[in-house]
Amino acid sequence: MISQFRHRIPYSIKKNLLPASKHNTSGAGGAALRFSLRFLFAAVLFFFACGILLYACIPKRVKRPEVPPLCKPKGSLKCQAQQLDEILTNMTAEGRFKASVAETSKSEEAYATILYYPIGTAGGSLKLTYDFYMYACAAATLGLALKQIDPSRPRVALVTGLTEEAREILSDGDIWQLIDVPQWPEATLENYTGIVFGRKAALWDLVSYKRVLFLDSDAFIVPDNSGQRLKRLESFWQLEPLGKWHPYTFRTGKGRARAHDVKYNCIQSSHMLLEPASEVAERYRAILQDPPSLQFTDCIGQDQKVISYLFPFSLMLPIDLWRTSKYSGKECDVVLGEDPAVDEIHIFLHRFREEKKKVQPFWGGDCTSCILEGKRCRYSNAFTQPCHKIIIDWWWGRMMQLPSTTLNRCLKHHGANLHNVDQACYVV
Image (tube, rainbow, N blue to C red; front, side, top):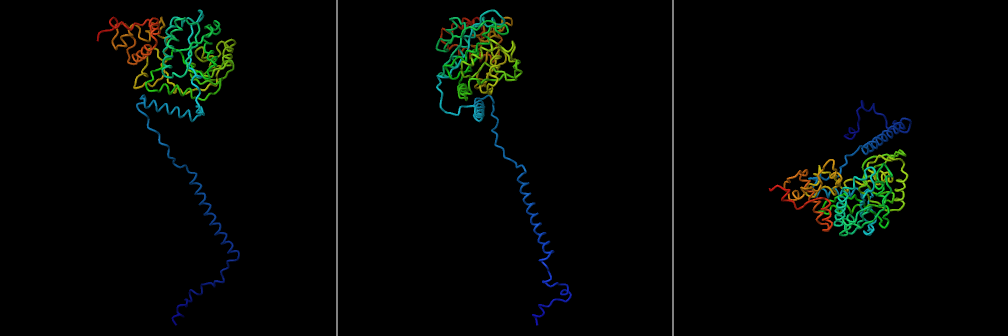
């Protein structure tokens, strides 16, 4: 009885139920249902995939590499060493240095400078005659510094028209090996003595060396107490050779070859790493014999005009690789500090001997002994800043290391008196 009640369905409900057999899943209605379900499922998958793609395309926050804190104080020896390491690392990444670790014999690489005594009276050629020995003594201090910092590489000085005394200033103590260069013809360009333009052509005649690093004779290399100067000079020699037509130089600005209307960089020819080759020397002199025009380049200077024109595609070096500072008797704070953030003082020697301006000689003149002693001078003295004393101390410290005969010659031509403390200085 109970089982019968369990299976009974109220009539009101039963009459509304369709038999299972009446649900048609195989006809057109069933197909539409299956299509709808499949479409819905595909749509879900589609939008899910689009969501994944959209998520992948949204820029993610990339964690940047940590930047090392700015080194302070900037002029400290530690910060200078860090700056140099960064420069060398960047140059290495750019492929500037030799790929091979095999060393070139240092005897095949040479430092070079140029010293000449101009002839004639045309144009500005006489401006160097009266301070000529000042340049000779400066070149001697340059050679001595290179000998002390990098004694393994030869040092050659290209000389023209020197007196015997000047030759001895350069060569005494095995400071420079002298190579004579013939005098260039008179007044070939712009009413200047031709050698003012052609003096550096002879650098490419030094074919007994694979590479030559040229420095101007009035470059004073700062004392190398930390080894920085040697490391920086050595980096020059490690640069990848690019061929005789592509020296390494420093840039001075933009210029224009007027004959061909081609833009190129002006070269600062006071420092050049070059590969000697007779063809280059011949081309250099050919330009002088038949220049494109009297003013064939906007670049400043004389030999810089020719060199910039000759090498429009020279490779420019970072200016901080070899840090130079010009000194003409005024600002010089760059030499202050634990180890000055400068490698070379380019002393404008001619500025200190311009008689019209009556500029005091850069070594101190009649006040030299007082400056070195740290005393006040009775005479007119323009060098009163701490940096002035440092430069004068460096200069005479280097001069005192020259052979005694060279020192005495330079004292005579400088007109310097290192023994007039009692007469020139105030008693402290």
